[in-house]
Length: 334
Image (cartoon, rainbow, N blue to C red; front, side):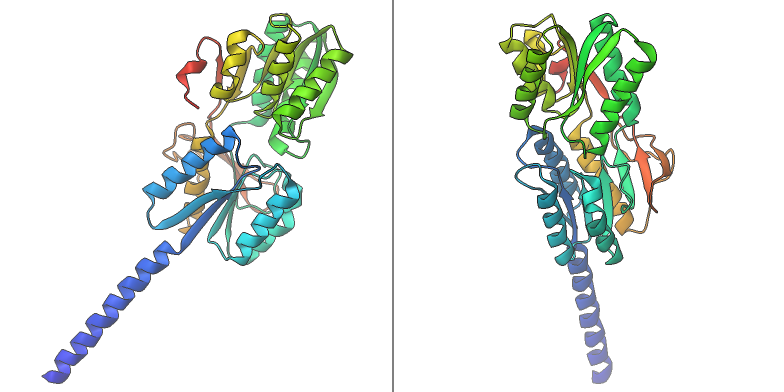
């Protein structure tokens, strides 16, 4: 009788230990989002999404990190450190996708799940998440620019980094759209690099205006391009004489939209992209993947399309693109 009770107690104890161990194992799941650069509004907004995901998934430790300045080598070092720490999953917005290929391959070889964003040329990823079709997005910006320019005149294109796959695709989407449809639009400065830096974009825009005093339009790619361009246009007193469109955030671009130095912006919500990356990373950890037409339960990602990526992974595209101008930018509080 005593032996039976003892056996039962041992079994109960073992069960309790197992439950505790399972709980501990659950909290040992770590998903780290690595962004291009910390401290700018775009990625501060993405961090809100990462924190919301962490709050909604208490069994997962989820947080965001990144270099203090936009630098491929610094981002690579952060990822190497995360691999050494044996995190569960890495969700990364690459500054320069090719630079990260060896490290992301190493991560996957060690069982770490890898998700990317704004990098549909990344080979060593399991899932790359895009908010939309990048070429169509760039063409859409260009259509608005062309309308403002009356389909005629000199224009220039800025990009944050020539290594940033999505930004180059947006620029090319705009350039190809104008080439195909608006022969009187004369591209005088294609893809000038601004290092994802508003001050640099301002200096580049000033030089373009000096070099081409009869310029009629700018198309920007980095969220900070329109800020620098808008500042240069305002300083030169050229509001209403030069058309400016590009990717941007309403809170940052608002004052330039109000002054007329920037005519319109487009964007997707970085917060929602942050949630999407982490949700897909969690799916991979759970042995699941994204299916064509699936609803991820996130606005802009309710009916995603799935295609094969350049490596063994897949590219998932949403419909999360938003156009705003002076009339409606206040509807968005980020």
